[in-house]
Length: 148
Image 1 (cartoon, rainbow, N blue to C red):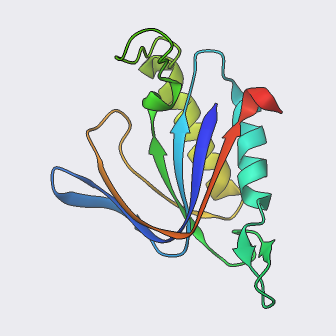
Image 2 (image 1 turned 60 degrees about the vertical axis):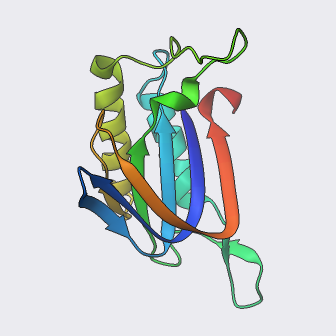
């Protein structure tokens, strides 16, 4: 499982011109799922994101978590995070999980964040989405559960 985590002052997602999810201060999480992922990867990623200290404290140091600032998460499924570009110029997405595997893991990820007390907004799995954000910092972190 791969997550691109962007610290944002606001973010939203629209489908066919209609906003379906929006947050203020928090994280935009682009989540890629491969066929090898499991609930163990979900649990690890939820724990890491919940405790990731990249929000500034009173002294201006990145020392606070999303929980401590009472931030929210906009979670977007992103199969292209598993795009392979070693051969040619057109990415191969063979490592991305099929929807029957990825959908339940994406839903479990969102449910895990919610159970951890974090407000979660989402896009729609498999939809053509337009994502808008104001990256705060900018701060962007990549976590791959296979590299733990």
